[in-house]
Length: 129
Length: 129
Image (cartoon, rainbow over all chains, first blue to last red; front, side, top):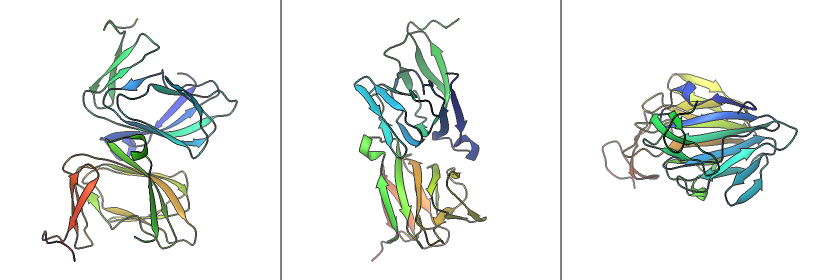
């Protein structure tokens, strides 16, 4: 995730119920691993560039002014920048207590320890490293 | 609120934890009455135009790329388009149960009856009309 830059916008104003990031994907960058949340809804709005939305049901090319939403327990998804130009988008996710992430393509799981704080382990619960 | 147009984006994807609208204010338009929420956090991101953010602690002129967040029980606020050009912005608000709106400058109160559904009355609880 070195080709990704996140600026937390919502925290700056003291918002706690949901997070808002202004996120930049450099060429080759990815938003996250392919994932879905158990309780958290997510929403993205593209401001610049043309990322590819990769889901477990296929890929969709996005452009500025397009948006996508991911209801809890829905389609697994992530964004990839396959272009030579930067991608900039707004991402919003609520902070529902007890949320868990699942990653169909990778040996990782995530549980929310506190609002906005995540613990990542292998799928068998053992720690990394 | 005739000079305002809201396109619900989040509902389209089946999101329930928060709402996302793409909102347009025509010249002279207002986002809402001056208000604050008891439990809901709000966030706006300006895409087009130059609205004025009016709060109970003063006014701020905004422009594309600027954002503002309003934590629950914080500053009362609304956006006014005092220009001759349209204003377009994204607004996000969570749907915390039991949320109430208060309007310091108007005889109106609002209580959330169900997620995203509001009942508006006078401040003494009597209905309008």
